[in-house]
Length: 392
Image (cartoon, rainbow, N blue to C red; front, side):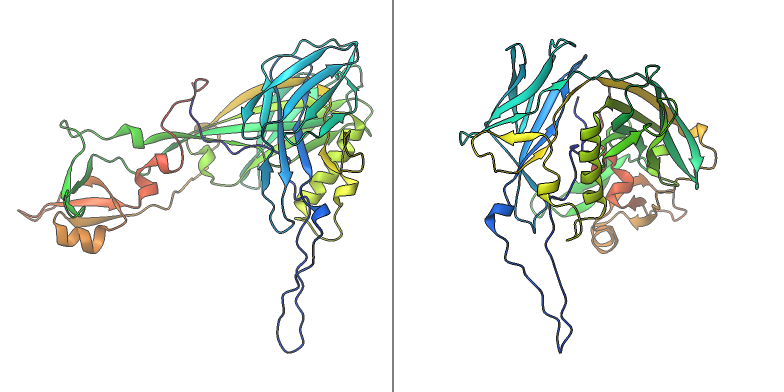
């Protein structure tokens, strides 16, 4: 299934460039001298799935402090190792992603990640027990500040989970503001439009550019704790849809994934979350403070960013229809213009626009058509025309 995704990840800023403005007689940019030892950290993302479902680990390298892009770590070898000597290999999926469809782990054993990079360096995570993740009881939502707030609901009768992390994928259906039954007839020599013509002989609209779907994955770190509560009951917000957003213009779905995490992992992710939300300053946690539980065997002094442990993944999905949210009032802000169907008028008024429908004009002998900006006519500029297999 081909869909548009934004890759999930730590979404943190490992560090930031320090820029200062000196006010004497002119402004001068301050460019700190950055030592090479503060770049190129190995970043390890993911978890070892102790339940049903796949295990996926992403490896990357932090680049220059002025560049927040993480570069994928290619051609590594990854294994999940048990205390009993069992070994499970992960496949190289390319672009720094490594995974296995299903692991057969024992709840009575501890496991760790062991990896070797292409340059021969070896890294291991600490052994951790398989953590039980309680199911997601429900996903609820309510209108707040004219938008929609989505909540995760869960509980652990044993009062043992206490620390939670959530990730999600949200998918929504989008419709173009206008149907399109016509397109430009192009001069094969000059590639200039000569006029408009019907897309299909029966003059029907092109539905492949009218109905689309878009999917995005969570990029922020979403955490929750019941440590200070008398019972391990979760009712916490995980997503907010802005007022009048296109996400709820037709039909919206969120697939929520829930994980039980350890106290140490919770503290690690809290630091990462703080570092991300503050966008990186000299007062933020530095790499030495956020290294996690992964160590380099080849060079014990090397800093590695990441925290890998064994937990279970619980998943639940809900749908929200536009009709369920009164007065949503989504407005795409699209307008259309009427253009005479001749090359001069199209060149003057239609450049950069897409034809939609032939106009009904009262002037005998004068043929005109309507046109609008491409995103208002062609939904594939914002999504894909391939219905997800889970869509109703």
